[in-house]
Structure formats: structure tokens, C-alpha cells
Length: 211
Image 1 (spheres, rainbow, N blue to C red):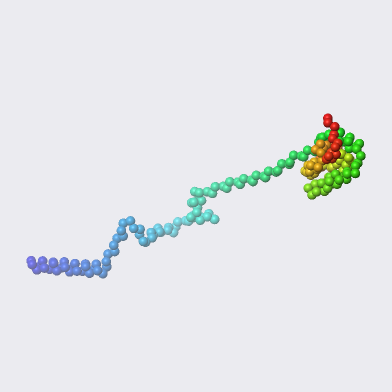
Image 2: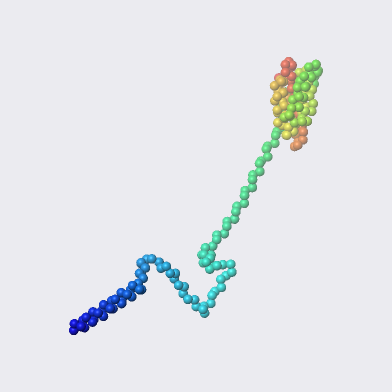
């Protein structure tokens, strides 16, 4: 009986020694911790050799077919045509000189008075005024001075309106203020209008009769 027990114990010890030796030579790999992804990629399923592949439409790829089917490019909105620039409005026409001042009185004095020896001085002053750079050339037609009144014939056009005002504004400082404008007829577009301007000479002592 004692020998059997010793024999069984010896067999158990030999078995344990062999199992320990096997563990040392072939250690068991540890299981990956839960939640960690496996380092080995998943194997693709075997393809059926008898399966028929569907042809892909030309000009498209498998990766873009689904996205094109779901998302479509919105059509571009037509661009608005640029607004046409506004044309500047034409300026209103310049009114022609109107008959004004004591025309009849100054005209009568001019026709009756003789020409004096000093008449050349105001005539030269008027001629020089119409030679200035801001006065349109060809505007002055004639100038003639009597003892107390000078008659200036000018050719007025809408383009010369500014020069007309500038010349007689400066001359008014050297003559009496009671000048008269006597236009001949009515102006026609782009045509000259003759205007007779009567300038009373400064300090001549002759005034037009009061109306």
C-alpha cells in the first residue's frame, strides 16, 4: 500500500515537471485587453468566381457614384446685367439778351450828337476789352463813340454768353450804369444774334430822359 502511494506521487511529480518544461519552451500569449483594436486587418471575404461584375459608367468612379447620386451641384444663378450708366442731362439753353434799358433815349442822343476829340479813348478801351483771352474772338463787330454815348455792336451766340457777360461787367465800371441792350430780331439755334449795346460815357454830363 505504501509503495503504491509513493509510485503515484512520483508519477504526479514527473507530470508536473513535464508540464512546467512545456510552459517554459512555449509560453502562452496574453489576450489583448478589451477595447484595443486588433493589429491584424480583417480578411476580405472570398469572391465568388461565378459572380458577374456590373460595369461602371464611363467617367465615374465607385467612390464618387454614391456622393453624386445624393448631392447635386446647384445651378449657378444668372449674373445680373450691369446697370447702364446714366447719361448726363443736357444743360438748359442759355437765354438770349432781351431788350432792356433806355434804348430809345440813348439811341436818339447817339444819333444827334457829334463825335468829340476824346472819343478815341473810350473806343480803344472797349476794343481792348474784347481782345482779352476770356473773350471769344469775332464777338465784337464795331464800336463808335459820340460826345456822351458809345454804341457797341456785338455778335451773340449761346457759346459766347459767358464772354458777353464778362466783357460788359468790366466795362460797366468805366461807364454810366444806365446802359441799354437792343437785340436785332430773335436768336436762332447755332446762329449769331446782333445786339447793340449803348454805353453812356462816364462824366459826360448827358443823362437819358426819365420815362
